[in-house]
Image (cartoon, rainbow, N blue to C red; front, side, top):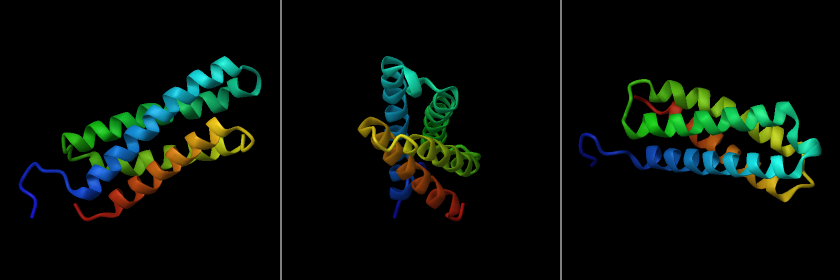
Length: 118
């Protein structure tokens, strides 16, 4: 039994997935800028920036047990899923595929978290 203020294992998994996605998006943005060309597509960079921002915010809100955390998890699942899709368009690039995997895992964890009873 968890005590008041303690995070559930599901919430901790979601926080971890969000932070891994955040880190991967930040690293991938830097990678894309160094690669140039098709990697610096504005839609791709926008997806990475949005995902980086929302995953960190979502993790922060869950850690402080915000009453809005489940709403944020739903939004985070959507944004991370779109980022994963964007990264998967460059399936010939290992860095982009790693980012897609992290974002997909985050989207799945956030969907599961948002579906849990409050």
